Image (cartoon, rainbow, N blue to C red; front, side, top):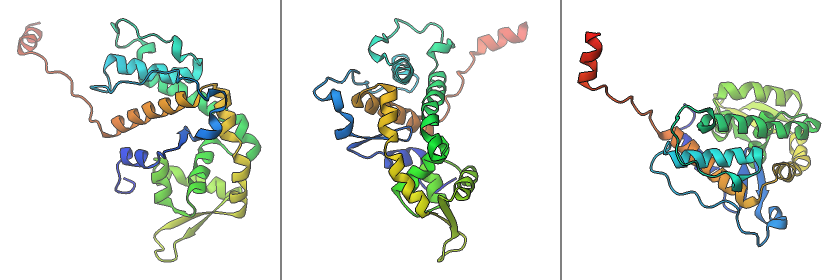
Length: 243
């Protein structure tokens, strides 16, 4: 367990009013409005669900995620029914997996000139936000285990972007500090968020609403315990035993 804060609390702590963050994407409201100034938000507000798997809420989440791929939120009507709960197109997990893979792919050609992978880019974002950071603090900010983060830091250190040093006050703690090269890389990275936003071809309002829905899913999944299987009626048990 990293730190004493829940995943939901860490998620909320990273949301900042006045700016947009989506999959490592930060878009300033003023800069991101462009042609959207005065334009009505194209996505209707999402009603608060009674449960994560309520049918219409599931479809809303799926439609917002798939909008990243199809760029057609307005053309995604809510089906009349969800008769098949195992239909692939009805699965939130499928939409999340495809969206994450596809959006991450948008970053690859943008990050290659900087010598960064997308996971390394997220580490750099966290360090540009706060420098230095302890290994545990950095892992908590990224919702990663320290053991998962360590290989990323080794590669960034080899590239000359970070230093890993023992904390002077407590040698049990490892501090991660940006080098001059790592600090200078931030200026080159400033063009990444608007380029990704342009590639997604979505308005600031759409991205903000998508981010809000995704963070609701993350928070719910981080705090909700699995629903137990329904109990089998005694009569059904007796009938099964007879067979």
